Image (cartoon, rainbow, N blue to C red):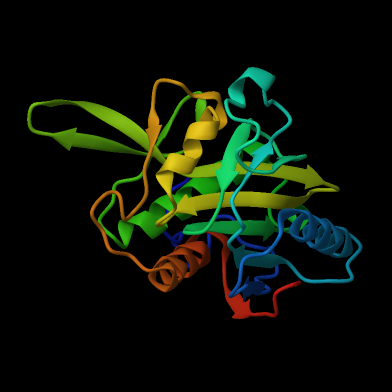
Length: 240
């Protein structure tokens, strides 16, 4: 995985060749999934055409499930529970809902590095760096995309729970979709699916770990860590 710190020249490890800032937008109210995908795809196309700058868009969705390109029908345990949307991102089924920070990442890898594995590692490093701000040791595992935390308690066997999911798509070397960090979602809502096709591990959140983190605090940690990995940002308007 990429080191989460700046390199010796003080540059972000997955930064742009021209060091141009990335737009950083936050939606204050939940955004319906279809409208968000439409806006995200339009922005990614504009970036590829050179008509718009890169953008990270932070938002929450109403409760819903999404099916990535590798989703298995059997992993949708309760199909009537929430709306289900087909998604062009990588991965399997995942849940989005209030209390979960979704970050849609629209970056131009042509101006960074045309390396998909390194890009996914950079996304993982970004989330892990944000978790560091709350003294949470996020980790990655071979064969399991996303960020995990090890749970230990006296008299109980240790276990690993997922705290952040990653699912991206590239078109013309511009990324879209992104990451989702569990701040304070209703973890019971994950019960309608097999999250990311993994049956041997659970899900957790910052609040579930005993940390009363607000969404604003999570956003601040994400912003600081993003700049260490990807480079400078500037405030921008949300697409919706």
